[in-house]
Length: 167
Length: 167
DNA sequence: GAAAACTTTCAGAATATTTTGAAAATTCAA
DNA sequence: TTGAATTTTCAAAATATTCTGAAAGTTTTC
Image 1 (cartoon, rainbow over the protein chains, first blue to last red):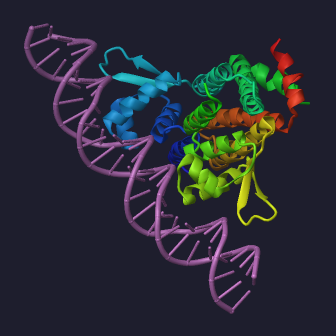
Image 2 (tube, helix red, strand yellow):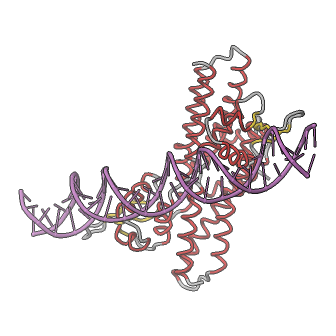
Image 3 (cartoon, chains in turn red, blue, orange, yellow):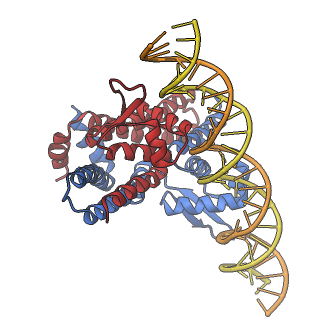
């Protein structure tokens, strides 16, 4: 397998896997491209490499920055904006964890809390309903706490201390 | 807030949240409906309740069963198939964790492994590429192990021993 | 074995998401 | 300032996903 072939395969696969996670395919592919690129790239280079439009590139670069996975770089003597990926994969993974926690777990907790407030468990039916809501709240809270802990931890702690818990 | 209103809100919100997780809205709503239903429901009742077609109901019930989140029930004296949700939310959450691990983490590990095999780190460029691949492999492996252990653990262990780590 | 009751399938329709590309906005150098 | 270079926006087009409903398939009953 040629190096370029392997890289292309990586980028392609990364995009496909992302869709399963509910993440835009192109966003993932741009991320993969920047992860693999030794130097930072500008919009034109990304358009050329992935054969996609300028608008698409712009939008997804913006999203990737909001996820904290890439950085904008202004090179001296260059008008164009250059982008580079966070190359520390553990750091990037923590960032993804943080974002998913904020975007996906927090809304669950908020909604369950609101529902809990609004319903009194005066009737058996209400009590049963509230049990489900409370249980989901507890599970989501557990996931939320765990993700919080893990995303704040260092790689070394995760791979040593944390993993030893399970022994 | 009326109980029925709260239930409807729960079902609606659950569906909306699901789409963010890359999960079909209707599948989630059917799951929510069954979670909240004291008795098991048949296809017609679900069609009526959520105002969706028979084909849609059938397909999503099938998916929910493949996720291990609902069970088919054959009631004596009834021709129709009835469905009930796994009411133990911790059990359901473990099931979701197991499935996501199988569907989303395993493919990453497999792909990274294949790429690692196929590329020799003879050149500096190859070595750099392999570093990214190896790092992703390590992070995915960590997530894979953690999810494996958590999905095998009991609720009591998770909420007591595990949570003590946060102190 | 035939018909009724029910479930499954799947092609086409409806809906939702993503992408394009050109116009508008912004930035920067002179 | 001006205008060239670059980025951003967004309506329309392309694509992808989900849903429908009727036909085909299966199971059960008599």
